[in-house]
Length: 239
Image (cartoon, rainbow, N blue to C red; front, side, top):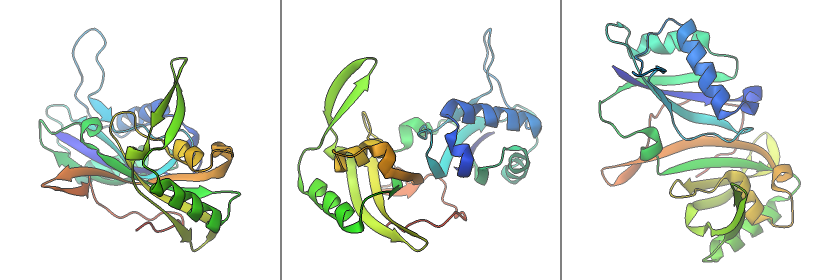
């Protein structure tokens, strides 16, 4: 049986990398006694695959992984949920677990966009709103990037599907609410902040980066991969 897990990553655990997260889940699965299927060959690996990498330092309410149970393992989704919950390090939360059909698209292939919230430090609500308005008004938005030692300039305007500013009840900072497309070389939240405020340091500006949703397309519309509510620290509400 193949299962899909939605989990959160909040607090200090955000400083671990995508590779660290994969290691944490592999250890948690072993600790929980959940028998996974393994690949063949000289170096068998557990049949476990993760979705889009979360930037190191970012938090999330909607991270995903898929894995396949070994033949003969008699566990249902609810039992896997309970076992994983007790085996993961502090900061991870198992939101829900559900079976998936064989042959379903991979998470990497299926996700078309993500919703992000970015708390901005050191700028006013008015300045944030002005930056958003000016960005949405232009047909082109250039971002300079470096990859494998080569610098390039990309037009990332098409990556911004929606962008607004919101306020949080318990946080005076303005919060960017952005829906960013996951196609081609997608736009990272800190790159978006850098494009909005080109004269400021985006690392200093982005006080908190939080992924709230990952979207797939079904029957002509968008939906969450696995839609379950989760309690989280106070954050702005994006429309």
